[in-house]
Every structure is written in structure tokens, then in C-alpha cells.
Image (cartoon, rainbow, N blue to C red):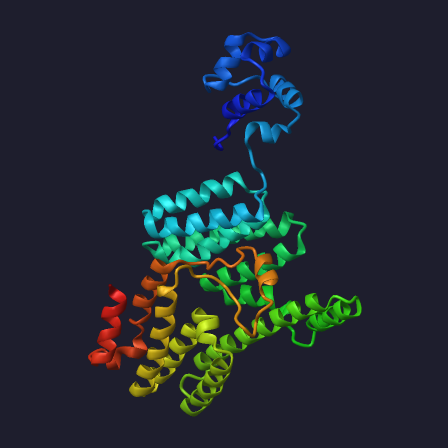
Amino acid sequence: MYGLNLADNITRLRHERRITQEELADFLGVTKAAVSKWENAQSTPELLIVLELATFFDVTVDSLLGYEPQLSREQIRRRYGELSEDFVNLPFDEALSKVRELAHRYYSCYPFLLQLSIIYWNHFMLADTREEQVELLCEAVAWCDHILENCGDVGVCGNALVVKAGLSLQLGRPQETIALLEPTAEPSRLSGQDGGILVQAYQMAGKKDKARSYVQARQYLGLLNMVVDGMLSLALYENDLPRCEETIRRMKGIMREYRLEALHPNVAAQFYFQSAVAYGVNEKWEGALEALGGFERCVSRLMEAEQITLHGDEYFDLLDEWIERLPLGNMAPRDRSFIRKNVGDALKHPAFAGMKERKEFQRLIRLFAN
């Protein structure tokens, strides 16, 4: 049912002990034929025999059966990568079936169940109908609820709360999202000072490298959050062109100083795209095309990279330890094929309708259609 490997494990453990089927049968009080059938997966031993086998081989019952109720961090990352590729390479229903099977199998492995919720969040739009999309989003919300009700890991629960809030927003339930996030999003909360206190504690304890690594991670996240907030500002003030242009000017300065196109081309691409939308809404076609040029540079960088990963640079040179602690490590949540599809869809934005016939815009469409 769950891909157990009892037959193979009995054979392997017996060989490791260098005993024959007959010797194992004598110990258990069964026939050699019974052991042979177990090892050939023609039958399975009774529960009490399984317990005796585990005792004899000095392994846990789970290990003997080959059942993994909890996955390691490395296993979670590997399975997430495989599932992401499945959504590109397999029919959607087949990829979905794999996710559901794993969710059922590892329902108590809360860090993995959280990543499966994120898989749904990243890929639900591939479903054919809105009804199917809603079904997937609701399924992921239920997984988040299961995590919040049963998991004792504060970090996993905090992430599950944020994922649930994002899923609720995709479901068109903004009030639910507000209710979930508003209590912990108050800027004046003392919890906002925890990072600075922790850095001082590292210094006091003589752990300068730890303090420096943590400060870099805070700077890095602060940089990304500032650019993302700039995108949100452009969307909120899209009919106020002077304010949008000032936001774009300031954010481009920050992005240039921190070399964001190389450091995090995905966030940079999103900002350029939102800038293009703001210009398009105000029918400033030259500005829109210039912003789309930045978008093209960043997407091309992503597409040309051997592997899309999170990374630092010569300034953010101590991020590796922090990145390694992330649930997916340095893995990107989506691969090239999915990015290409998203770009093609993005260029259909209504804000660009007025420049559809322009040669430069047509070139972009052809570029990302291939």
C-alpha cells in the first residue's frame, strides 16, 4: 500500500548476518519455505513474527517494514524537486495523484505536508477549471489546518499560518486572510526587535561569525521585502503616475546598488513587470517597454542558469548557513518550464493591450513562446 520493502529488507538483513533461510526459519520456528515466500513477496509474516524479526535483526519495526512516517530535510527537498518536475513533465492529473498519495502517506510529517501545500499553491492555476482550482486550494487549506491543530513545531506552524492566509486570498476570502495575519503583523510588536537582541547576544557570547551571518540574512530579507513592498505600492497607486515613477526611481536605485538582477533575478523580474504594468495602465508605452526590457534580462538570466538556486554574492557572503536551514535549502520552488509558461501568460496582461502591435513587444512574445 505504501511501497513497503519488507521482502527486500528481510533478504538484505539476513545476508548482512550471513545466515541461511533455514537458520532464520529455525530461530523463528517456521519452515524454510515460509522464509522463502516472505523474501519473494509471495506472502507476509504475521504481526508477532514481524516483531520477532525486528528483535532478531536489532532494527525498529518501521525500519524492517521500510515505512518512513517522517522524512528528513534532504528527503523533503528531493521529493519536492521531483514533484515540481512532475507538474511540468506529466499530465496534470497524474502529477496531482502523486501529491495526494504522498500527502496520505506522510500525513504526520508536518514539514513535508506544508511543502505539499506550497506545491498546490504554486501549481493550482494549471487546473482546467476554476472549480478544480478551488478544490485544490481547499485541499491545501485542510492540510494547513491539520498542521496547525497537531504540529508542535512553532516554526512550521507559523509558516503553515502564512501559507493558509495566501491560499485563502487565492480563494477570494480576504477577510479570512486578514483575520489570520493581522494579529501578528502589527509593526509595533516587540517581536520585531528579536533579531537585534539575538545579534547582540551572539556578540556577547563571542560568536561573531554567527552574528554576522544573521545580520546578513536580515539585510537580505529586508532588501527583498522592500522591493516586494515597492511592487505592492505600484499596484495600489497604479493610477497615480507621478508616485509610481518616484517608486520606480527609488527601487531601481536600491536594486542597482545591491545588484539585485544577479542576486535575486526572480524578485527583480517581478518588480520590472509590475513597473511595466503601472506604465501600461497610464499608457506610457516607452516606459512600459523599458521596464519589460529589465524583465526580459532577469527572466533570461533565470532560463540560462544551469540550476535556479538561492545564493549570496561578494557582499552577502555569509548566507549559506541561513539558506541551508530553509525548508527547501537553495532550491527554487519552480523550474524553468513553469517560469516560461508564466512569462507567456504575463505578457497577456490587459495593461499591455495598447502596445500589442509594437515590434519590440511582439519580439518578447515570440521569445518566450519558444
